[in-house]
Image (tube, rainbow, N blue to C red):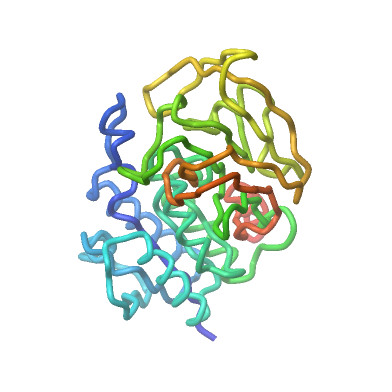
Length: 316
């Protein structure tokens, strides 16, 4: 049976208003193309035979394939493109149907959330090219391709290499990192970086070195990606003020009313509504009243790139 790896490269990742208005460089598509070339080289070296990819409107993967020399059979998925996040979700569903062993993503938290909505139990190798990049890993594409290839070919795997991520479930949808109850009545430009517009946040993970809303939780009570816990933070006066990077290059003071750790599957109210819910930094849902959220261990399967390569070293 042919070893198949999927590839979803989001051409608009890392180019939203949070980077444009902050002191952050954009991630141009020619750099994403270069990363994809390196991913393909790693997959080829690891013995992967075929790649199926999202045929993005910018032609990132198509350009990466031009002039490269490898044994991979690389073909686009047969799908109608909309230019929206739903393309990534549909690509993931098609890759599952075609028997992909691993899906490599290029994007940020939003891209991986879209892929997670359709990837079922196929593990992800998530490469950072987005805005906040809490969920994906900042890693060279060659290394990411090697790790994906080792898992896809079955030479490494199991506990410690592939782990189930947490997520925040809310209003029939989910976030991979954080869900925030916002005072805004309309979705608008989606991206949110002003903490004064936020009432409460539930975090699946929150570390001090994160960028984005999850940095708030990381400054108060760090919760790691693998911890069986979550965190709820209510913003407002009455408690500590923390200074955190709420967007790349944008450090702001944030007033916190109170916070507490959550057990997995413990329900908590996310603001009092009406307003909107931001999922992984982008307003997605309009709500009319209090909305319940909970952190669960039902996120996508994620490849630990370093552990995959550490174990792979024993196979030469």
